[in-house]
Amino acid sequence: MKFWKIKLALICNYFIFAILLNSVGVVILQVINEYQVNPEAASVLEAWKDLSIAVASFLLASYIPRFGYKKAMLTGLLIVIAGSIMMRLFGGFFMSQMLFFMVGVSFALMKISVYSAVSLVSETSSEHASFMSILEGFFMVGVLSGFWIFGIFIDLDNRYESITWLDTYWVLAVIGLLAFFLMLSTSLDESSIKTESKSSLQDFWDMISLIKYPLVIFFVLGAFLYVYIEQAINTWLPTFNFSVLPLLDALSGLITSIYAGSLAAGRILGGYIMKKVNWFYVLQTCLLMGMVLVVLVMPLTAGIEPGSVTGWGTVPIAAFVLPAIGLFLAPIYPTICSSILSALPKNRQSGMTGLIVIFSALGGTTGSIITGFLFGKLDGQTAFYFTLIPLLILFVILIPYRRIRENFSLNNQT
Image (cartoon, rainbow, N blue to C red; front, side, top):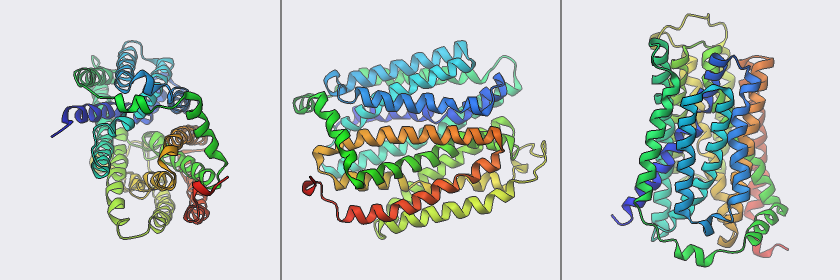
């Protein structure tokens, strides 16, 4: 298969970042338990990750084509390898913040480079779409793997004094090194991209000028709210499992993998359904089902006695059902992103991608911090009930968004 080696390298690059990016919830639980950090303070770990992604994307996006996609990916891998080693050696809450800052900056380098490199290793539009689906699929495999890897080491930490959950980062450093050497040994022809690259000022203006269109305003609100919801659940579900249900800390992380699995299944199933049903009706149904699931499951989490869960056989049914909300959330984000990009001419899509990255990162940070605040000031059940508000607002926003999109043509805008 042509380009098989570079495609494998891109998959491996995405795999390591899937583990690190989605480990925030598990790490928050650990810093609360290990370092006696309160939930409000622990929630800033999400901000260190997401804000560094947003700022780095904003500042570096126009320079990466000149620096080189391969060099940017190698740099990103070196940063996370160093961060993983430092986290294992030093630990602590401060180092956790520095790790997620490093992960955020390096992911900005990686995502922009990987998405751009896909066009260099795809000869047709169908091949491009197919490989993008494979990439996102392996990203979800990485998310699932991360929960299990961390869960295993947390369990070993509880059993043996010689092993700590921080030993997980030795494994992640090794995975990063393997991805680095695979990328280093792979050739990537970037000549076509460099010759077509515009000035940094023009790239910046293309991105900012899109904000004036109502379609884009409604989209960024929708993207912000979606990532708010997804990251609020993803980040705080391990802590919810531990403090509300209450599961053992190792079991809390493993159960959270159901959420990642349901997201993966939802994207595959949603893509199939939308071949036959209009995307708008699919998304509205998904949002309604998500709200119904929250309303039905939250009462099941009340009144569970501490210490009543001793293993898989005694896990409350709510622990398995609540993560299934990912099945309904999954199709929303890729679908609205596709709807906005397909409405714009190709020469404006890179600017739109920059806005997607920035507002997604801001939404993730906001969702994590607000949910963490509610966890600390109220309780976990109330914090998760509050996800109904952004779910409802997103449901309402999609109605005018669909109408504006149907009548939108950027070529006719002034």
